[in-house]
Image (cartoon, helix red, strand yellow):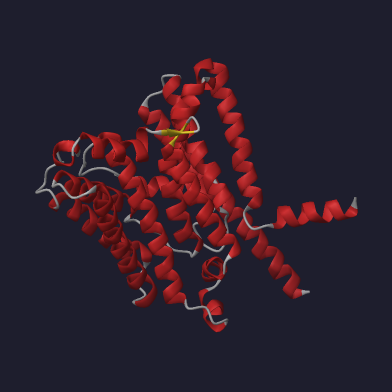
Length: 340
């Protein structure tokens, strides 16, 4: 009995676990509440659509959370989504094979991630300023790749078979009755969850967010770890770009608009601290689900878009406020102990 209690205490003491579980409880309450108002919320097709729509927020949430845990932020994510959607679509419209188009686009996204990491980690630019600059650069590239026009249908030169394969894989297809979009996001989520919780790189990411100077003294390569983090972020954003391209069947220059903020919301709602050093991707999963459930439920009960944004905005502010209060309480406790 005592052993079980000790294990339970250890479980609760895991950084961010309490916030993650709270987000999951909130998700269940919100989902049931909307379902009682409109029973169609409980329908199988709505659940499938909800999972598919949630996948974009989950990936962008994982991207932003990895960066936020280091105490930084990535404002270029939304523009990188749009850039990726436009590059991959433009290449396919030009007749470039699907695999090659995906690979080239992924390399372009990683290049933006490396640039972000260098600006923040090596040249010590404030992450807000550095990624604000690359945000404009990435969106500019999205406009330039097809001469300030959205692309035509991706199947024009590729042929219907290749275009359909791309769209089926990233958006419309199903595996085991669930949309591939969700499986893609789940696989990447598990990979990054393992990376953050079980690898040295993950420990270094948390260490940098907790105390940069102490991390340096402990032998952590802050520059390299920061670059890695922004690369992880950019890879997730590129995949979201593929998803949006597959959904529309074309490239849209405005794709991914405001997605960087959606990533912040998913992470913060799930307990990832924007101040760095704490939070679990498990919480980001719950945060993305809460965000999409709110959006889906408010749509199904006929709420206006403005109301949806206000509700989600209030939740984000409250989540950050809770984090600040909890951190302040911990600092007070530490100060009281040190004076004794």
